[in-house]
Amino acid sequence: MEWLSVREVHISGGIRVLSYHRSSNFLYPGDMTGEKKTIEVQKYSSLFSDIRHLGLEVVGCDFFSGSHSEAPPEWRSKSSSGWLTWEQGRDWSFIANGAFKKGDSKLYDIASRISHQLRSCEWRVRQLSESYMDQLNAKLKSGDFKSDQRFLDGFTELCYLAAQTFLIDACTLRDYLIEFYWHVKPTDTKNITSIGPLLNHWKKTPPLDPHGVKIQEICSQGNWLDILGTYRNLIIHAAPLATAGATLFAITGTVQLSNSEYLPFVKLPLPSDPGKLKEDRRSGKHFDDPLLRRARFHNIIESTEAASAPDSLTYANSCLEKLSIWAASLAELSPVVGEVPVIIPIAGSLKTI
Image (cartoon, rainbow, N blue to C red; front, side, top):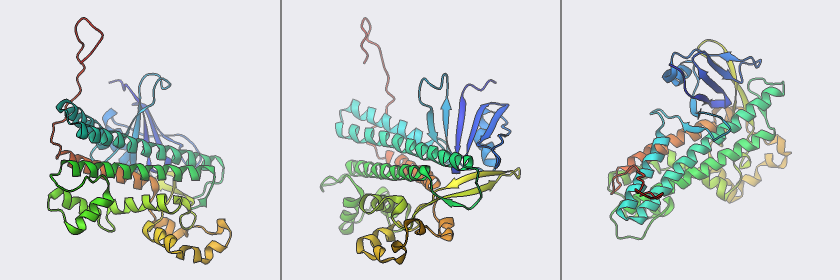
């Protein structure tokens, strides 16, 4: 069977797999010397499992068809259950179409925004992955790539800017999902469109429905949606991600594949405790740190802390999967059935219905 599309698989750490057909599948940027390395792919559908068997983590994939200059790639982020985010972006657009046909303008608006924001967050992960590749390529081309180096160059800030943008867009999606939940939930209280007012409301009237109980659980201190919101609040209300505490540098590393070869990668660590950083800045304690009285480049995250800190790209991809699972669960509450848009030409005219 001929392989009909070119695929560029995004791997954590800035690594890529370029796949053209059965005999042309190779790792980019290659090994530690920059030499291109081919990989064996059994068949078209086994590409991602073959990559995982090498010991690599798939972030997503660009699908190219026809001339690459004609249109942007079809990007899909990869989750443990396939193309979940892409599917949810599609399914929420079907809910919006069903609401439109039923004349429910409010539901149409919310579902349309959720569909848009799912696609936006998915694209933000791609932008972050692209910035990782640029960072890795630049470091390799400098000629001094060694494992476990902490470094800062012109691409590092762009990586953290991409991470910030994802975190902000992810929390926008969070609030759209909260707005949908509250819209379809029978209630006499005022409209709620974001997480803060909902949690304040629940202080007096805790939720009893399964979806509300689940939302309260994932928003509890230290749970994943709480941590996501804390990162966003640190950025919006305190300081840029990379300099909110000790300066965050890029870190080099190598990964050993199942075939014993080594590949270079980069890591962009996130602050391990964004809540404490925000509170220390609010109280002024952060500015009493003697490290801040030294030169800026001496105020660097400690290597032991950096090793245990979350990686920006891995964290973003994991959060997107969790948001997509949550979106799929909430979609069950829709009062209208999602409908696939159908374009029907009107006979004798150029119009459609």
